[in-house]
Amino acid sequence: MKMIGLLALCGLSTANVYASCNIDFEVQGELEPSLQYQLTYYNTLHSRKTMDLNNLAAFTKTNIELPDCPQKHKADMTITYTKEGISYIVFESHLFPNQSSIIFSNSNTLTFRSCAGCDLPQYRYVAKQIQQQGMDKELNALVVQQADYLDYLRYADVRAVFGERSKAIVKAAIEGGYTAPPNIGAIKQDPPHTRDVLEQWLAILAPQKSFKNILGEKTRQQGAFADNEAMTSKISQTNPTFFEQLTNVTKGFKDKTLFTGEVQSLIAPFLSTTDADIKKLINMINESLTQALSLSEQVNRVVISKGEINNPKPDDTARLIANWFRLLHTIESGTPEQLAMFSAQFRADVMTDILNRDDSKQKILAATIKKYSKAIRYSPIKSSDKDVAAYNMLLDEFKGKAEVNGKRLTLKDVDSGQQLEWVYENNSWKLDKVTIKAF
Image (cartoon, rainbow, N blue to C red; front, side, top):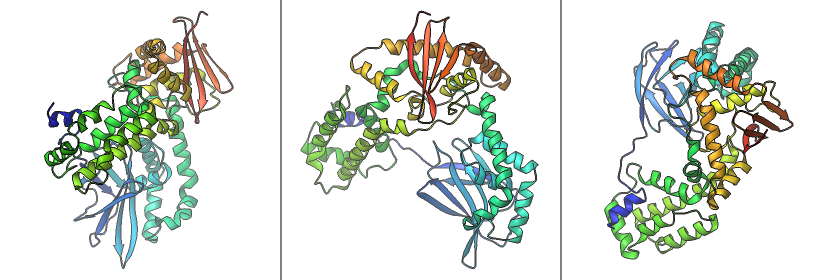
């Protein structure tokens, strides 16, 4: 096999990936034309970028190109100006994934301060309620009187005036998600691929599978290497089958220690290299290995807090189970977030079955997801009325069939002969067992 073919097999291609995106934004509030405003953009906790906003005018849409466009998590955005060496905050807001426009206003600034954990529908609801109650006008008056009113050192002043009122709105928005299914999240066009347990779960829980995906993503980034061809040629001089061996170590299902040793042995001859591109590749391999080994632990740290499945003592068990299945259809398949909806023991059992080539439990799980998917996907997602009707079908399906005993919740489905059990773990209800029962 040619070297370039082996490179592609490992995911090492020269495909360009652009991380930036164009965003329309509009300031709905007072601006001084004599001031130079800046947009500060926090893509992650430790990543901050600032850009000048030239000729910024209120109530006028402006288009900017953002570096590192958020794809998985919302980003913080703040408009400021500097006067006599002091920086003043004017407006704040969140930019959510897949959002092409953003509005800066006093109501959004208060929402930013009080609704940190909200998703986009909840965020918009809170901003609208704050505006209807006139809190945005109150904030504007205070900012006019005291230019540094939004300074983070004066957080107590903001809380004293708006804290309890804004928190009450946020609480109502979050509780609304327990009873209004559209607020849990948008139903995915494609059903969850839980029926493909083998492929989906291995990609995250088996380090050699996740290693291949992570490394491939890193090497496909724009400008990953100065000269791909020269780098592969130099590596082949030391080890002609390096990329073939790198591909082979990702096959099968292996113990973490064994897999780590195989990778480290493979890259050992290149650790003392001075070539920049080879050093970069080796660093990518080491980083990918570290991330892959910790990915399964990442699932344990994911906290699910939507749809009331984080309520340890549910008043309505039917609604909790309906919310669980509905949430399963709103989270992207094959991600730590989706796997976190299943208990640690459940995931461990699945991996043990895969190792033993036993797919009996997977078939039962697939049948369960398929059964309840029919209700959740009963109607097209474009109509909220039909969405609620489908959700109510799930509620009817589960009423009178579920019971809670301490930290365990059991659903006995006599019609299908299935018994499902959830356990309260890591502050939310996780599916723990799916068995066939003769009731």
